[in-house]
Structure formats: structure tokens, C-alpha cells
Amino acid sequence: MSIGEQHIVKSYDIELGKLGDALARMGGLAEAQLAAAIEALENRDGEQAAEVVGGDARIDSLDAFINEQAIKVLALRAPVADDLRTVVTALKIAGEIERVGDLAANVAKRSLVLNQLPPVAQTRSVSRLGRLSLAMVKDVLDAYLGGDSERALVVRDRDQELDEIHSALFREILTYMMEDPRTITPCSHLLFIAKNLERIGDHATNIAEMTHFRITGKSLPEERIKCDTAASLGGLPGHDTI
Amino acid sequence: MSIGEQHIVKSYDIELGKLGDALARMGGLAEAQLAAAIEALENRDGEQAAEVVGGDARIDSLDAFINEQAIKVLALRAPVADDLRTVVTALKIAGEIERVGDLAANVAKRSLVLNQLPPVAQTRSVSRLGRLSLAMVKDVLDAYLGGDSERALVVRDRDQELDEIHSALFREILTYMMEDPRTITPCSHLLFIAKNLERIGDHATNIAEMTHFRITGKSLPEERIKCDTAASLGGLPGHDTI
Image (cartoon, rainbow over all chains, first blue to last red; front, side):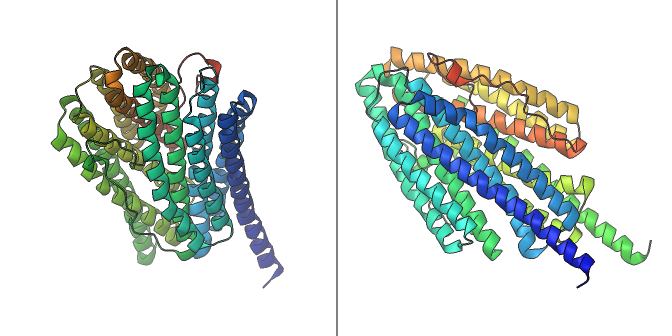
């Protein structure tokens, strides 16, 4: 290998490294934002919630950086095989993490609104749902960074449990609203907070699938069992992932 | 140019063309799915709603095809400049369209649930919101296919109007629930349908920004005015884009 080639290889590794570092940092921030949003909800802590709302911009700018960096590597280095998968999945995973950040910020925004209303008992159940979604985010980021495809698939499988808990919680909150119509306003916000947390589980699942693809080069079949809302017409939806 | 080179250039164009065709088809399907979902909601048409739910799989498989095709072009052709932007934005826009399809399917799922409950007057206002989001999707896809950056930016600017209408509608539905608690269940589904439609506007906005980037090579600054839920604590959120 000539000195020139060594130089090229080295700067290529540096650029791929920058991409990986930015993604790791972005993931860490999103995880911290989500943890803080759940805490702020539990403790009716307006200051902490406002910090989460303000902190989302950092995640957004890391997303923009990753997009630029990925395009730069594609243009200048024309990566193939493993490296190409790393760049393309970085681009896509950054988009997923950006949404997790948005959803965490939305939980914080709504908890600021809840702080102005009388407390509702169901907040505790919603924050438990939040801890489950947080654990999924943490585990899938660890799986991605550790290159652990098996661990990623375990996260993917846990999404169904999250969907079921969300579904039961949806019914519980609705019943509460009917029993005491004065709680309609805070409970409707809780419904959306719960939905945001359930959506975070979907993004963790997407990251799990992309992690599997990055490591193995194979896409997963759409085998996840999704309960069909339309099939339980009398009931309430909750298994849909929207 | 040798015959060999001609051949290479031609098959490259064919591959880029395949990517463009798949994206155009995917966009057309998503637009049709959304239109059908809104119609099914208005007319309490369970058959049409069920078709929309079933039709989402076609959009998902086009998304998978575009992902594969994009990675293939990146690996084999190492595109630069304009072509690279085309491939990368195709990858990202496909993700946005896939979400529009999911959201349309969710509107259809929830309208199936609504069909089992007494009709609610606000359904008409929600379907009007749906027509606005549909117009945004249609216009942004036209802008992308026509390579019209100006038109894309007009769509982006319209998202604020959609957010405002959604916000007013959210308040209206909540008031209705409080006045007549028997409507809590159907109205809570309407709240989520309205939210899905508002989210579709956000995806149209994202596609507008990506279209602008594809054509000009420049990212847009985050200049969109977003009303801050946290700043209107007594009120109800609606300007958040989650």
C-alpha cells in the first residue's frame, strides 16, 4: 500500500467514524430526553418539561449533520457492501431517532398543559408505559452500537407487549372520562401522551429492523403480529401503530 | 463513447428511471388511499374502509422495493451531485409516503370503529380537514414529479393553516364531549383521526423540503413558524406536530 492509499483509507475511516459518533450521540440525547420527559410528567415538574421542549433542537441539528455527512461519504467515497449499509442505515436510523426526540418533546409539552389542570390518577400508568418504551429505546441503541443483531430482534418482539399495555390503558382512560366528565380535558391529553409513547416503541422496532439489516444484509419479513383494530369493532383500537 | 460505455450509461438511466417510477406509483397509491379513507369516513362506508386497510400492503412493498433499488444504484453506480441527491431523496421520500399510507389506513380503521357507534356531527369537520391534507399531498407529489421547487415551498407554507384548523377542531370536539359525555368514545376516535390528518400535512411538508433539496442542493433553514403549546398553557395543544 502506498502512502497515498493509506491516507485515503484513513480519512475514509475518520468520516465513517464521525457518522457513527454523531449517531451514538444523537441516540444518547434522545434517550435522555425521553427519560426526562417521563420524570417531568410523573413529578409535574414544569421546569424539567420546558428543558425537554427546548432540548429537541440539538437532536434536530444532529439529524441534519448526519444527513450531510452521509451524503458526503456517499459522494466522495462510493462505499460498497458493509460500509454502504452502515451509511444508508445511519441515514434512516437518524430519521427514527429524530422522531423519538419529537415525541419525547411532545410528551413534555402536554405535561406542561397537564400541570395547569387537576391531577389525574392515570398519569402513573402512563408513566409506567413510558418506562417500557424507554427501555426499548435504550436496548435497541445498545444493540445497534454493539452490532448485536439478536438483541435487536428481542427489542422488536417486545413491541407487541407495549401495544397491549397501551391498548388496555386506552380503555382505562376512556372509562375514567365517562365516569367523571370533568376529567375529559386532562384525560384527552393523557390519551395522546400514551399514544406518543406507544409510537416510540414502533420507532425502536424500526431501528431494530434496520440494525438487523445493517449487520446481516438481510431485510426481515413483515412477520410481526399486529392485532387488527377493524377485527374488534366493538372495542377500542390500540394495536394499530399510528 | 464506446459501445460499452453507451451500454453502461443506458442501464444506469434505466435503474434511476425504475426508482423514479416506483416513487411516482407509490405517491399515486398513497394519494388514492387517503382520498378513499376520507370518503369512507364521510359515507360510513365500511367496505371502502376495509379496502383501504387492506391496500396499505402495496405501499409498504413499494417502499421496500425503493430501498433495495436505491442501495443497488448506490453500490453499483456510485452516483454524484444531482443523481446522488435524487437517490437519497427517493429513499427518504419513500419513507414519508409510507407513513402517509399508514396514517390513511389508520383513518380507515378508526372509521370502521365509528361505524359501530352513533354518528357524530363533527365527522364532517374532520373530513374537511382531510380534504386539506389530501390537497397538500397531491400538490407536493406534483411538485416533486414536476421538479418544481417553488410549488413545493407553497405546500410547506400551507401546513400552518392546517395546524390552525386542526387546533380549532380539537377544541370543538372536546367541548362536544363535555356537553354530551355519551359521545366520549366516538369523539375520542375523531380526535385521533384529526391528529392523523394533521400529521399527514407534516409529512407533505417534509416531502416539500426534500423536493427543494433535491432540486437546489440546499437545505431549508428551520424557519417554519410553530406555535408553542407550552406558551398557551391554559388552552389546548394543536400546533404541535406530533
